[in-house]
Image (tube, rainbow, N blue to C red; front, side, top):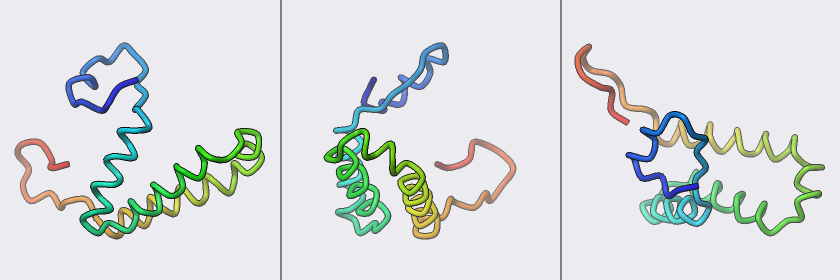
Length: 92
């Protein structure tokens, strides 16, 4: 488990997990610049953390649908940059 520091992802032979506190911090910074999808995602994650695990498992299908909708909203709010040329790496 780590804080999403870019160089950690160069380790390909391990399974990565991101720290929940760091995810919330990143969502808060997006919220502060007006990203509505980040508000929804932060609310969902905090609600899941506060809810009993068994309840979450029983409601898994609805949670996944809500999560997917937030991702769709995020892509609409912040579409990926268009590729302008054929050279170099794509922007993230």
